[in-house]
Amino acid sequence: MATIEPEILESLVPLRELTPEALTELAREAEIEELEARSIIFRKGADDAWSRYVLSGTVVLVDDEQRRRTVTGTGNAGVAPEPLSQDRPYPCHAVAGTDVKLIRLPAGRIQELLESSRLPQYGVNELAADSEDAGENLFYRLFEDLMSDRLELPSMPDIALRVRDAITEREAGAGELAKILQTDPVVAARVIQAANSAVYSGQPQVDSLQPAITRLGLMVTREVVTAVALRGVFRSKNPTLNKRMVELWMHSSLVAAIAQVTARRLKGFEPDRGLLAGLVHDIGVIPMVTNAEHYPELVQDPGLLEATIQRYRGEVGTMILRRWNFHEDLIQVPMWAEHWVRDKEDPGPDYGDLVVVAQLQAMGAGPGAQALPAFTETPAYRRLGLEALGIVDGVSMLEEAREEIAEAQRLLIG
Image (cartoon, rainbow, N blue to C red; front, side, top):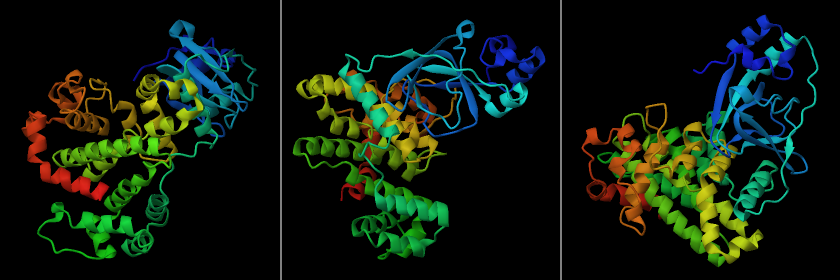
């Protein structure tokens, strides 16, 4: 873990009021927080008990009037001297404008050391209300709308929310879940279908919800319900947009099926969570497509729209999944889904790696495939340990798992 020298803290407001001994003590509790560009740091109204200073990079603050402001740090010799926020709860939203490193300190400990010292006001640089970059404007509009609860799409399907809440808040059993799922015959049928899949071959067929849920288990049932219910998110009343949504769903379904099948061959991965990871890796595309109509430049230039989607899809998707309270191991999937050669300090594989490998296999025979790396040449392939499993060729792997993949797609598409 990186350490912070007391000398760096002594120039910060209000830490410069502390004695050298207090600064040394506080430096031991300091942490470095590293975030990708456009990651959410905190939301208005939240209070996570940390005080943050920008060590390097740029942070964008969005206030009540939706004005964007920035705080910038340039390294150890140029830490932004004021905290990102002096008030609790936070009066604004904060998002990383670039890749950033933040110094994070426990706010309560600072207050103890200061003995009720008052934090002075700080200044930040105003950004222009509008950028000449239509794509950037679209991203910030989405960000502001999401933070202010004005972004209507996509929303977590109601049936998935009810099942999740029943399990996590009431510790519901198979009987109660069956009653909830009976209200949605399509989802109910898919749960029974999953319980009768080839994974459970050799066991008697089930034809009702409660034994199906018992066979799958509560957590797998939750993931299956969420995955199947997401189909409704990939729809639009606009025929042109709906065509794009159908294409997006078909791609996501194939990636999800390959991710599920691959996860079954790996230790430490849950197949149904792999399925869900594949489905949500492009969730950020949906609001970008549906909100693009507000930007004439994007409507008139499909190439610019597509470039904007490619640029921001990961950040928007991560914002949505965080808003939906997905588990952290899935929240980051949209961010990494197209980072074919991502390297990271942690040598362990994650669901982002799983989706990268699944995508490259799914896209291997399609248009633009020649511009993609072979999935066997990616860091994700190495981290997942696929070579040790004898998976050395994407085409043969798909051929071998053809029936498994088809079954997973039938579950999602019907």
